Image 1 (spheres, rainbow, N blue to C red):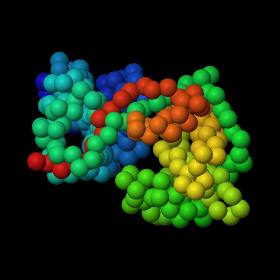
Image 2: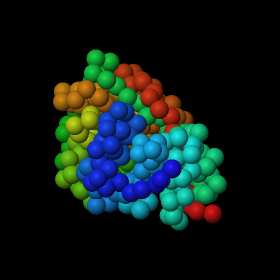
Image 3: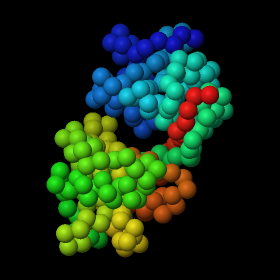
Image 4: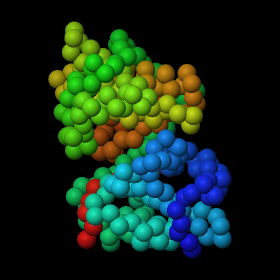
Length: 257
């Protein structure tokens, strides 16, 4: 088995491979096409066929896919001192030989194809812009300090400039529930859904998710969203909208032994 960096000569077999299962390889496709200057992808090849891949984004975020032997070979090439890493559950054992987790979770990728949607938009939804960036960042940090605790107004503004669509529900002038999506030629990935804790259990998240899905399916056939398995209220909201579990992952942040 050979492990080699993805380059222009290997792109044809790379695209043939990832296009077989876009939800599973979404970030490989997205980052290689749209964030190539910040992305490295290593391919594990056996008889010139891809049997595994590793994505490293911004020298900190890692995704692993492939056979057990491929993942072990790819991990040997990973030399980051700290990582945020996602892989299949069966690869956990190999990852934990190299990295000590500071936090870990079971993460579910849920998908929805056109025709499966069950939309319930029962509130007025507004398209948000850069003037809402500070309120968006505040809601995110309050909703999930572990994942979004370092989010800034500038991060939101940058995301909007790069094509992220933000929707929200306002009570008076106060933004109380938010969600975002990034549309690509492969479908739409919902990246954030969050509601201010004082305004939960009012159906706001259901309306936000429904409107995001509606906008995705107006242009593409596939909607995707990631959720932590223990976040049962979120899983219920997404299931209500028509999402179904697609893949389950081991997610961790950790440091090299």
